[in-house]
Image (cartoon, rainbow, N blue to C red; front, top):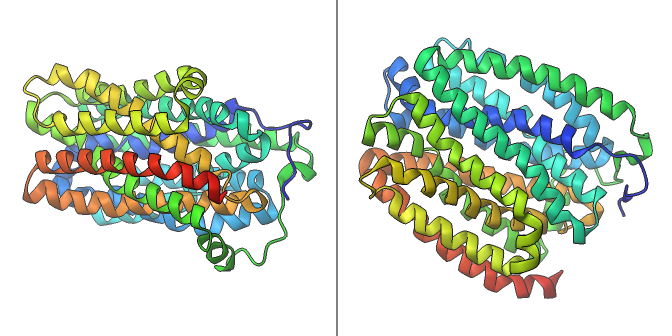
Length: 397
């Protein structure tokens, strides 16, 4: 059983948030820039979206390595080394001479970025009792939301006035600074707090096979795959949709996309009240309903100003739904929490990677309307299904 660290020193939410902020900023800076990158390389938006799949698919796949590795030698140790390699990869992305080389570099960066956020969540699961965990995770998620807000804004500004390449250089250098902060914080944590596990080898599939034999694990993993495929997979195209539909400058596109992060911040501020007021089932139903409504209508709006509240509400609804899934993931297997959360992240980002590729074909072939309408309907149905399954999940736990 993993040691709880309530009575021992632990990494602060601020430090964990700073590291995860950089990963999220790097991941989302691309969203408002798909059109300008496509233009530079003479490609379509759907084909250029391969840089998203090239990041998210290895991000998901390498959870299968980092989860057991973090459980075995220490989550904080793995994260410290990963953030350094992530910073180097991000800087190199800004030097890519062709679209295929950018796709390759995004693949390599996604490989090492995979260690950060899931192991941070697993570490929070080790450090906070379940009754306090959703609030702690909600506050931690505010750093991710800030990363989305700032990356979307900076992405738009760099795309309009500078170069999409320079945003990678800025994020890469900043990540090196954050890596130093994390390394210094880890030195103050006793080695016994690194939450080591005695699992079999960290490249073995046995821990995952054991987890997938549990009905509660299969339930959560299936739900987050569907969420990643449709919710996250389609959101990557909102920036390109705004540019193509309304012809707005990239700076304004980036500012509009910050609404997603603002919705997340609203959630992080109100999470304690929302959990107490709605409970887990209520959060799932309300979040899925808000997302379904906004996705179902966003492509049909005639005034771009109406996108402002719509994107904010999507951000709020996503966090209501996704944070509940994340909290459940941290409790699936307390004895090997890093492995369980990494399996969760693997399913999420595999879904997002496949979903963004599939929905890119929908955008190129049918249009944005079909992409967003389909995604809204599926996410709404997902919320109804998972909310009904939560009672079963409690019985299976």
